[in-house]
Length: 251
Image (cartoon, rainbow, N blue to C red; front, side):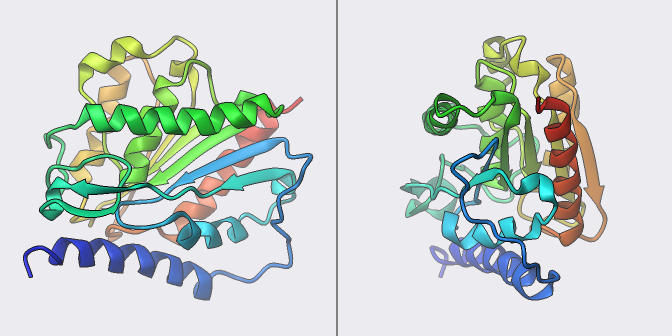
C-alpha cells in the first residue's frame, strides 16, 4: 500500500480535472482540427502519472475565433522511476524527490534539463515550420507546470508566454545565469490553488519573488479553496491571457 498510495493520489486528481472539464464546460461547435496554416502553437505539458491525450479536452474550451489558426500539442512524458513514489515507474518528465512539494524541496536538475531539451526540440520544430516564436505558448500543470517554467526561461528566444498551473521552481538559483536577455522577456502567468496539498501554495507563492531577482516579471493569481487541480476560472483566464498576447505579437 505504501507503494501505490502516491500513484493513486495523482491519477485520481488529474483524471478528475479532465472529467470536470468535459461535463461542466458549455459545449461549442467550434472545430479544433489542426490547421496547416497555423499561426500559433500551444504546447500543453501534463502532470506526473498523466498522459497527453487525457488532457486534449482542454483545447475544446478555447472557443474564441483567435484560436482558429492554432496548432495544439499534448505530448506524453516518458516512463521513468519516480523517487517520491518509491521508485515506481510512471509517466514523468523528471524526477521528484518528495510529495508534497514545498518551496524548499530538493531539485533534480539533471533529469529536468533532459526534459527541457526535449521541449525545446518540440518548439524548434514548429518555429522551423514557420511559426513566430512570439506566437508559441507553453502551458503546464503540476510537474508539467514546473517544466514549463524551466523550458521557457532556458529557451534562447522570447516566446509568446509560459503558463504555470500548480507548479513550482524546479531549479536552483545558479541556473539563472543561463537565461538569455530575450528569454527573460517571455511573459509568465502563474496560477495556484490556495488549498493545494500536493504542491503546496507556498511553493507556488515563492515563484514570483524568485523570478523577480532574475529580472523576470510574473503575473501571479491565487485561487482560494482550489486544491491540486485546474478550475474553469483558471482556463477562462488563460484563454484571455493568450488571446491578448496573440494580438500583440501577430503581424
